[in-house]
Amino acid sequence: MKPRLQRHERIIELVREHHYMSIEQLAKALDVTPQTVRRDINLLCEENVLRRYHGGATMGDALGSELLQGKRHNRQDEKNAIAQLIVDQIPDNASLFLSIGTTMEAVAAALVKQRKNLRIITNNIYVASAASARNDYTVIITSGVVRPLDGGVTGVATVDFINQFKVDYAVMSTHGVETDGSLLDYDYKEVSVMQAMMSNARVRFLGVDHSKFNSNALVRLGNITEFDKVFTDREPEETMQKILNAAGVEWLIPADLSNGASQVQ
Image: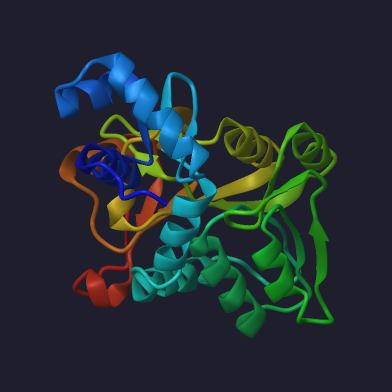
């Protein structure tokens, strides 16, 4: 493989940071024409590093796999702490949806250690694998297409499958939370699955570490105020606290990170 141009490396760096960049954004950042960016993206797509998506580029399988391996070890203590907060709110004998993401994998690991007789429906093959270790659990994995990048199952068939159920809890994460409370992700198929989970659960939990706040993505999932409780590892900014409190949404952080206060309403 030929050495990449410095401009190509910068494109990869920007997409890695933002997960999605439009052609116009890349052209402005690099001070080149949109036509140049399109040619660069095409070359990087041939290497499977990037993938064209809605007038821009997102991560290809090669870059995404590299990032996912990093995410599995990134902020693991924070994810485990968030997972423990969530598990503390889920009783034995409950039914729940668990979505895609490394935070949800931490939730599954904590559930297996502490809760009995659960019924788990998930589109995350890693969650299903962890939960199936318990012989008192009923674990159902959705139909659909498995995404090689992270073991997520998505697609129209996945949404149709989810819509057959009504569960006690939907537990999920998302890529980004904007300052107005908008929840964002970069795969519209994954977003459709999560929206179906939200619609078919009696109680909705959102688990996001602090890095997700003010993080950008392309597709709108919904609003943070549509959840009953939000679990994170740091106190949200004052504006976000006001949004949550006005909507009656509890936000919880680990006691050892909150000077003894584990939740604020």
